Length: 473
Image (tube, rainbow, N blue to C red; front, side):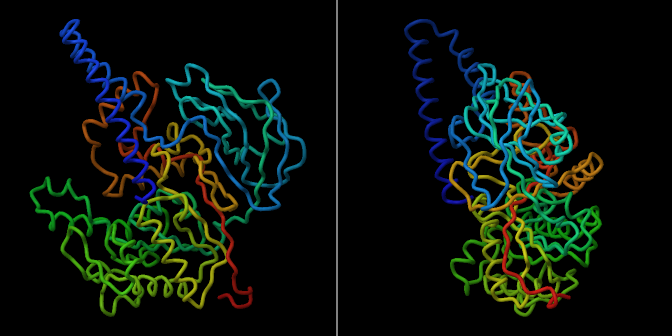
């Protein structure tokens, strides 16, 4: 995690401890001076209340406005909600990505149940107690909107009738040459399976083995190093084999073999090698033998920043992508994700090939661990942005039902998304299902089966200076 998210999480836990200590003291005083027998019931009810309504990591007030700046010249149109139908003044043309900026106010019941906005047959959930500007994703609803038949209604919340429609146009990046930067096995699938499964030319490069936090493998009787090595081998195999489910052959996939949670340290000391924290290994060639392409890091196998940047530069020159998918450096706080995009940008400056566009994705957030909120198979509203981001464009392609099922299945193939959640999390889900009305999909128990299998995928579009067309392959 980034330093900012660590600070937010630390502050959240400190506040929670203060509240819990205060509640315990009150309960003890009640037990001493009034009666002791209600104390166990009081503690049980307090725990259930916490798990149902206060367990989310929400590092901002639900009443805060989201803040988005769109690129200069992005068409904006006044919109009005009349008798439950959204009417737009002006012609938004053939814009594929439509974002509605609207103020939402939670009802009293929306403090206990997730507020929902129904957009035709789509549903997008918001924070309990929401009271501010939000950005709803209307992509795929353009025909109904243009015809004046798109319904919009809140459940457990109300919408201010006056709103603003932002209309963003992009080429179909699925028809361009794509290179996907995945810090770990599964990042490409979480962010972009729907896109890459229909892309005409795509290559996927995974930067790390993902070998740490191998508790499940230690439960099999392996020591820490053995478990980490096994997990690294399995996830490295995932990075090469699993994309075939989306039509990407193994020779179009590359595993670089660097070590999990070491990329940021590598960036800080570019000449220093950083081996695995848990496996005891320090030679990245151990998991590179199935790569179809020779890379600079193959020469000495040293896990340092110079090799990583050189590897990426070589891949850019080999695949000559029009667009590169990479983690959003300001929005996604995972340290490996931030460092991956930093390495890519340095590689672009070093390489003789320069892509036209960065497509940025976020599999994690600073401010809200639950985003995208709501059940699987529904749409993705824009994530919370309390601190302003660069004014990037947006592209939000649709995934039909068969593609969403394929995406759920491809996530099930990833070893890191298999297995049952801890008992505490399973109990929390039962409580939230009964008291807060939340639902989880049957396709898998990991939280990403809910968060990633959606009607939309979402990318921030950041143009780069690119070589002229006649320089291209």
